[in-house]
Length: 127
Image (cartoon, rainbow, N blue to C red; front, side, top):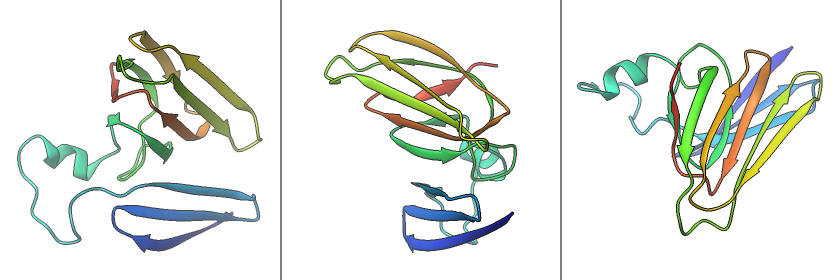
């Protein structure tokens, strides 16, 4: 499998997995290349994301991707409904929906390739 990174414009990055028909559009870290990062962001810049909002993210264990694990969120009261989706390389899609103000707990699995979320608030890794 070949991965091609298409740098569109900050803070968005697009990735195409050639031959698999998979496209990813998500958020790039807020730090410009070569920036010195300190404080709570330092560990996040060196590893995978452990808290994410609206967008679509690659799932994995390296820098700039979403770490697999159990995530929780409280859907904002003004949300029109929280929607999330996990996709595997084999094409299996797991989706979910929650109403405004709901408390949600999900397991982003190691087998997921992407995680997509909309109008949910900030998902935070719990384990």
